[in-house]
Length: 293
Image (tube, rainbow, N blue to C red):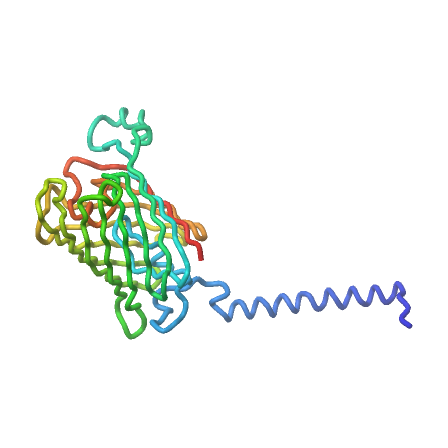
């Protein structure tokens, strides 16, 4: 039979306080030696055969640049919700005091879009997006075929979408494209996105197509803050006014990403980007994304 005395309690406490710091130190050594415990993944750390699609890629934190797609993968059965918001106040018209009085567009209504996408298979995403411009629905798929690694210099994603106005009842515009990205360590991502869109002049009852090449980039300026920019010049076909462009600052917080942007148009679908922006317009807006994986 064991007898508990004051002396045995003192010895037990001393032993406990000796063991605990040693265990904590061992755990710290393990965490330091295993980067996956403390370091997010960077694009240069992954290979095409790895099953790590859910890992954070520091240079590419979101599935969009501003409006153009990125090459970020979505894990199997993972999902992502995104809100796009483009205020109606044109910052190129009126006085500074007038814009300040309207909170730079916040008091003037907005074009709002909602997107939900899902990883239907490994490296295959499906999305549905609805924007208030012409009540447009866009059904969208992306196959992330190639991922940058030590032997492959770029990532490649194949794109397909079809959009229709009036809640997908008229003026259908299918699109085919390719997103190409190049990561530089965990600080910079650059993109080239050639896209062909059919029926871009449907609102004029004219059968025309447009081919544009989106160019974009994202640079990480601190641990969770990025500067972003993109432009979508038209290379052929129907191309009214100016190419769509925009720039932004964004903040990553866990599974959330908030982007404050300025664009020369309010379009966010492939068909709307193909029709371009405006030479005399700038609109304040934001994107808000939430990952569910």
